[in-house]
Length: 65
Image (tube, helix red, strand yellow):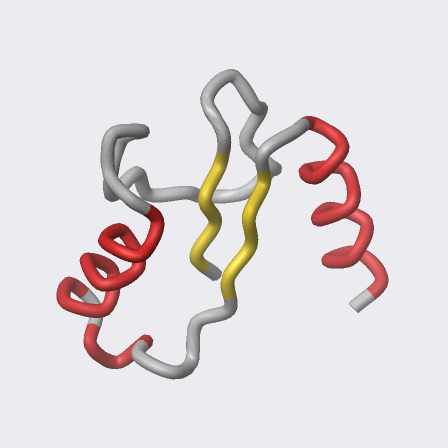
């Protein structure tokens, strides 16, 4: 799971690895992850979490799926 999390938005529960800060364009962060972890290319899902409501919906989807 690759999640772009907005500044000041809480992280969902779980283990997360910070790969870039807010100055990096989202597409650059995605390519960086693929360069660091080539086995994930085409396999990692993507989430954009810009608000606490986005995080709530993300958590709810993970619980039901």
